Image (cartoon, rainbow, N blue to C red):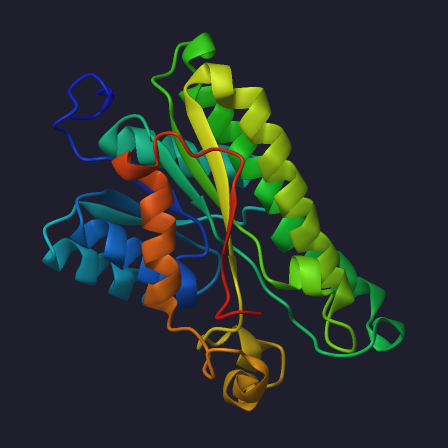
Length: 259
């Protein structure tokens, strides 16, 4: 099916890129989408073994799946990621813009500038570059067949995350502004753009920032009394991509347990 257009025949499975899909919410999303009928492109930056495990599990559920290494903060890598998807499966019609990290937990005054730049790159720059390429390829005005994009924001975008990572919160607020503006820009091009804003979830993003117990320690301040499981975020993402949400664009769906 190399080079085929999946929107020509509505029976064909959606072809979906999930960035940062080797772990956490990204992995849960790739696996959930595979289970409900998507073929998936599992993007990762460093951990090939983790991405391969996601691909193997996705294939076991009946999906076609590949792992593609790409640093989605780099334009050339983003172009290569979409090209790999097309060369293997055909035109991509869904993008889950999930790659993200906090990297450090501290007051802004105590956060190294290099860390601030890295956080903004992975959470905001990648969130601009990937939908930019998706728009170039999906837009009906440009010869594409339309599609859907879901960006990953965070409850931090409105909470501010003082004494934790206000720079991360600022980047995620940028993701929400991007979502609203791009949804308006692409509404006439057959592309819906939405965002999911998770709260605190049980993933290793906390360990990577030096606070492996943060999710459980935060449970007391979450109205529902516990962190989210990654699958609870994944199902919200899948709904926004799917046929039940065809009149939803420019929305930010908060999945944060009441935060």
